[in-house]
Length: 88
Picture 1 (tube, rainbow, N blue to C red):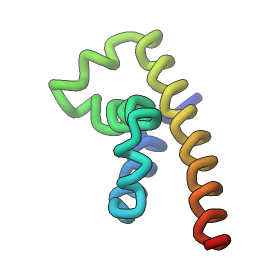
Picture 2 (spheres, helix red, strand yellow; picture 1 turned 90 degrees about the vertical axis):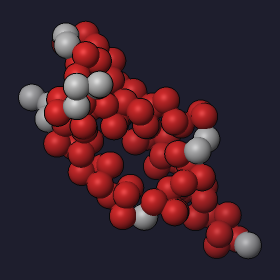
Picture 3 (cartoon, one colour; picture 1 turned 135 degrees about the horizontal axis):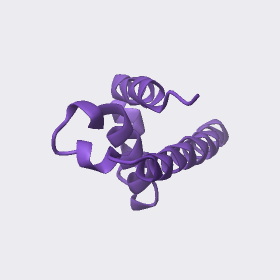
């Protein structure tokens, strides 16, 4: 069983702890749509404006896939970002 809400909530809270460091990634349109899925899964069930995006399993599965894509892409971004910092 996938506990997407709990995972996404923890991920979003972790990002909030270092918001300034994450800002360049989250401001990039190539990443922002997939990060929106993280936020919807994390906060949607308790938010009337987002809850309609989680009404059925197909919508939820699509969001989970996008959130997973974000985590994988963010990992690659951070690896490249760290490499640039160490080579500079």
